[in-house]
Image (cartoon, rainbow, N blue to C red; front, side, top):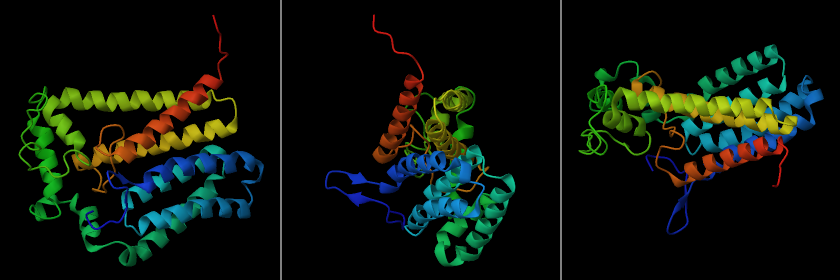
Length: 275
């Protein structure tokens, strides 16, 4: 789809393994960090941690699915930061990683991906090509005004002007129908949700649970920020879904599993009373 091979066909449905790889990576990497926390200042343990991230990151990047790959980057660095890895080590590895990514980008990324990355700076230069999605997204959000056009009464999405209105640009669709008030409500709900994730992690009974909460926080926060930002023209269009809102069974199920794990962490720190 759109040049990417990211799905397995199961007959009646399609399955995106990279979505479940996110939560599997968070859980397994949290186990590694909690087990070897005292050794994370040693270079070999940091290198092994980086290798655990690099394998799924590389496999997803060559699909190519740059958006999901970037989620892994943020989750990895967020988790090692919470685990206490030295700030200088994180900075140096980020510089090395970014330099390698820039050098390899001409061989990994396709031409249309380069255009999408740069189109947000000046979409008007290619209004019918790389800048089309962003222009239509801004039109949809702006036309919603303060209170919106009403649920199911949006025109940009309904008439087909806004591509992928049900997935990547679902926020634009929602903002067109509910206006500034509805869009702001979505942002505040995500902020409240992330606050609860932080609270759950800070009150966790062990490091393993805390690191899982940190990974889920980075995953949801990054996806929400980038998706909403790209519909507004603040960030490049990368195809990252908006958690719990974008169409996609694999994404919804993965996010639901993540919330289920968080609820389990929250429950285990409380004494259960049977009346």
